[in-house]
Length: 130
Image (cartoon, rainbow, N blue to C red; front, side):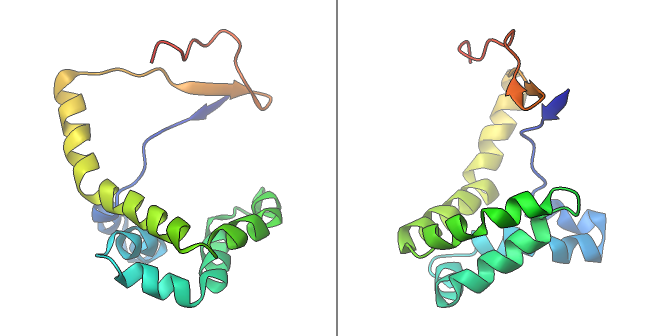
């Protein structure tokens, strides 16, 4: 069984994992920077940015699958709106998402974990109640 966790390491937490991990998580801070800093930098060489990022994210075991789709990501990042949307998502993760997560913890909201067996979402899972 494969369990998918919806919890992500935040850029502000990167330093507690040490300098190498903090540098490895550079994209958290970069993408959350004020408009138009990351958009301008990424837009200047979106292909190089995507190759760098995907190359770092790709594991040795499954990296070939990620890199097979690299062209799709590069094509998408030709669109300035895609770059802007990605940056806005990270900006939200560094601001309002933190407050929303705190409120959820206070309210003790619980969400079902999505899991898969052999690449398929388990048939017994009821995600419509979320």
